[in-house]
Length: 349
Image (cartoon, rainbow, N blue to C red):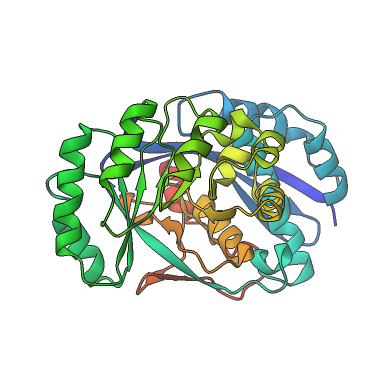
């Protein structure tokens, strides 16, 4: 099977509300879809969606024209030898994996891991912690979610702990919170925040330190009852260093940040060998990126909740994202990624 054609579709998708974190915010998601068509009549899709404005879509536009005429093995070899940035690499890797899974007659998750369960538990993405968070938490409970994620680090430690207590007081037993500080704090602030979580139903805190030094993270983790996790720091720290010095209990894997589903699976295998669990999440992606993260989550097969239920933040999409019902994302049994484009939406973007 050879690639016959390669096309790139830039897009810009407005959000229903400004996305806010300790690293800033944005009103829309912008990126580019890669579509690879083969001589067997198959079509593979990948998403290039950097969180910060950058050169990734332009790099993909300049690079993808070399793919037609190659078979999948040759295309992957060309990708491995390239210096594409992670978001652009993710688009190519996802599209090639989509084609390979279709050729094998398997959902992408089961191409990655034959034992993958196609029903994946998800956390709700509630956005930034503020005085309205308790009401948003109750709305998510009504939709069937039992694990709720909030962005922290945007206000003072004392204020945020007070808001968290309000949220916790509104929750029934068994519902848990997942928090993401996005590298908001110095070491002392992080210690005070973690100490203040005592007695609250929190199961994980991502990226507490502005400077993610592994020795300092290890010290925080030793004194924390909850799992600490690394996310956006992973590319700069690197797989070898993170696995050589396991400092936290969990890693958060995002295909767009790490270079695609296969790279994420490599991270997961090595992390598991060092006793660290992995969670897959989107980067507030379009349907293609969401599907890639969802198939990755299914392939991880660890029973944890994953950060996939983010499509509702988009006012429109490039195609249908996988549905979430009762806090579960249910992937179809169709081969490959399972993406069906909305061609009108792509033209509008």
